Length: 148
Length: 127
Image 1 (tube, rainbow over the protein chains, first blue to last red):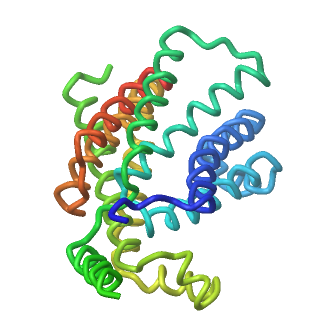
Image 2: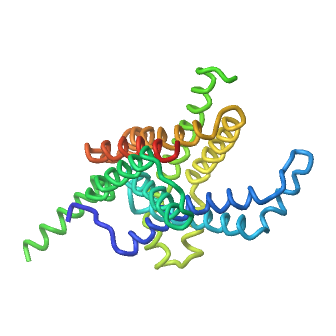
């Protein structure tokens, strides 16, 4: 078992990372556009913004993103997690088309296709680089199993 | 009107500080070990303690905060439609390079291809 494969739970955490960041940004953006203009003369109005529903939900999603992102980095490589999570942008673009009826230009469809293919590439490979000590431990346990 | 080199320097600042933050955070999480296992063993408190007692984690968060302010500064001078896709997509490639050099990750042809495809894809999607 040299190849590190993910469990269903770990795929769930990656999905959470992918979706919570773009959704959190979208909620923040929606909340901030509904607010009256914030100026440097009244910086405290930013604090009251935190308690509006869209912004509070956006912040909760971004906290969830950071927690699940840290968890993912504890068992997978950075070069595996980052491309995989970029797939969230694709899902949000498709949701915006289905729910909000937004038009998707040919350029954006091309972007969706490239991200999907890129994520397919990275998902086929191992999630984590095996360290020399891990390889040694694995070889030892395999040779013990073979001896029995 | 911001010149080409000034715009390049602003985007490069966002990309480099963000890459430093991501790599340091990833190094911190690698040094801590599987958080799911730690949580099973010592509960949520144990998992939080493992993260907040790691100096590398704070170094990572510091650079991520600097990247955030560099992004705000860039947005003050440049269009969102340039800064957001350029920094998001370039960071994927610089992270692949930094991951290979500093984290000794096995960035094989498959991961290079993924980084470049997703980089172009994010640019097209966000532009």
